[in-house]
Amino acid sequence: RRSTHLATTKQQAMLSLSSPFAAGFAAPGLAAASLRTRPALMQEAAVAEPEPVAPPPFDPKAFAQTLPGITAPFGFFDPAGFCSSDGASNEQVSEGKVRFYREVELKHGRVAMLAALGFPVAEQFHPLFATDDAPSFSAFQQTPLQTFWPVVVGVIAVIEVFSVFTFENPASRDADGNPAQPWTIKKDHVAGDLGFDPLGLKPTDAAGLAEMQTK
Image 1 (cartoon, rainbow, N blue to C red):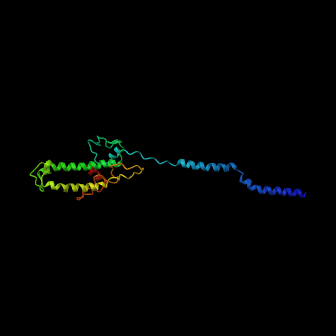
Image 2: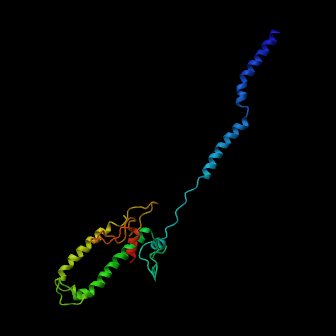
């Protein structure tokens, strides 16, 4: 009888000791399911995040059409195709290259307007230098204009030297790590702006400035 009681006591002790382990593995299916569900949820969250959309390729023609100066009846006038996708030199045209074309266009246009005014006026009105009413195309060969030309060249050189700082550094790289395209203007430079406005004619608002630039 005593041996039976000891056996029963041992069985009860073994059952009591094994009960926590049994409880810990009572639902292996649920534990495995939770382990499987967590990575699945993380994967779904990663898939649900929107992927960054790549910006569209730069369209030089569309960008050029946003610049002032387009008027009727010709509208956007680019017969040589400088602002086409491949450009006139069969290379990809960047924003800096379009800005360079605009800077060159304004500079040469201003020189042409001054020449168109100076040729007929200077032949008849030249109070500073007496040239005996010589034609404009040969007046620069007469004294004292021959000694005056170095001063003119010096003034032009100063303006051109300052314009060099508006160009992109040829040794720099763009946001994508590509080398800067040669002969490109910085994006923050306003074409034709020399910082010279002694009469204060430049409008302060963007709309008024665009209207004046178009005129």
